[in-house]
Image (tube, rainbow, N blue to C red; front, side, top):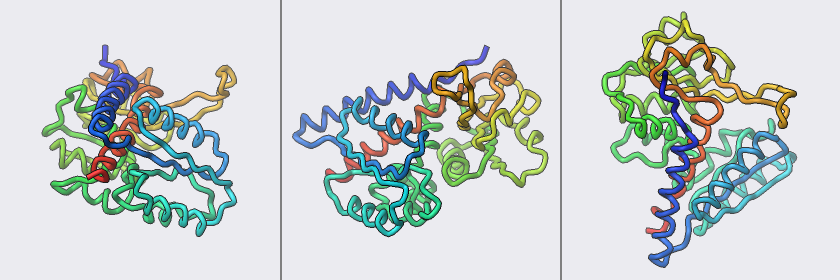
Length: 290
């Protein structure tokens, strides 16, 4: 039977660790870290994710500010709010929840965030620092994946790591982290990759981050592999109270028996993204309080 990588438990452990550090800051007469969250529009999933981030802030003792704007806000006005947060010394870090309305450039908004406050790790400076000996604020989801690998003591040195999905949010930064920090031999697959299965079958560690439910089946995974499923897609399901269920990129029932370790969806990587956001906010606060 495979070891189920429990992101809920690890994220809970991280929250407990951060809570102790926040209490230590307060005991030194310093204020709690402060995270601001901007959300634009009425996207249901976005509001759910933001709710999870606020719950995490409360759990670790962070202060937080929620800024909600109508989907009709102009790009210029949103940029002004970003500038205000950049200048506010009481705000240690902030995020702009994605997706944004079509008339607003995600790249323009993201790149206007001060790298010191970019707790999602999206800016060019933070992304580029992955290859530095002094990394800055790391992209949140890849950081969460790395934490799972470390805390489950999964051997990475010299192992073949295949990452399916080359997005700037997950696949591309994770490839750099697995190569530089974990000393793995990394293959990064994307939509132009020919014969995907021939690559995934070589993986000692397989990470899938595409957003295509059931993309990876048992014939694509070698026995004993570690499988980390980053994909999270909402699928309509009338039997659920919410009206939907979450599906990963890996056919879990088929693939799990072959693996040594596997993440479930939900409950695997998902909680770790928020835990990483808390890690980054604490780091940004420590840097700011200096």
